[in-house]
Length: 244
Image 1 (cartoon, rainbow, N blue to C red):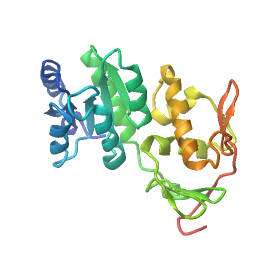
Image 2: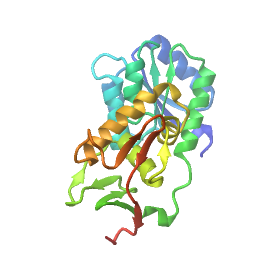
Image 3: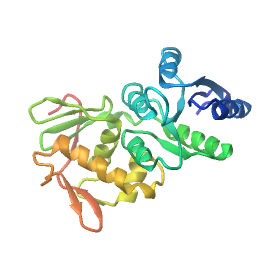
């Protein structure tokens, strides 16, 4: 990872009394910080140089943080840490489902936030996969391109999936026929311990089933293991991009 002085943060929060002192603190820690009071201002700033990470409030006037997060993780692939009020548990779950990398509950200790920022950035800056890891996943005539994050069905039609759904599907495809409990899935998908959010995994699994199962209520691929978690019940092959 580059040193802290080169790390650009975008801080999006409508509360100036929190945003401005926090921005000053982060600058003193060596980060480059831009501020936005709402999602519209954030989108304008995003037209310029992309930040390395976005700190994003959920509840804002106009477009809320969840909508902006969805845009960031699906179209820009920029890491996001939510700054959330204590009573917004449901929104935090939704944020994790759509691909946010972490969350910090207000009021928070700024040093904790800096630690979370550095942790997320470490994960984001891990070395690129080896060349052979660009091989596609095949499971019963479905195909997942891990580099382009494209999923195609047996008829060759593109099936749109969110960042969170992609991460979850790849976790299953990397561990076919293995029983994965919720804690392990959360750790693989979110990259951190998040045991308070078992529902986030269950909701993500339900969404993914609707994309790949013929009957999501009687799933063929992603099977529930009572008391254990989930199992991807199909064989998985890795093939070069130009192979069927």
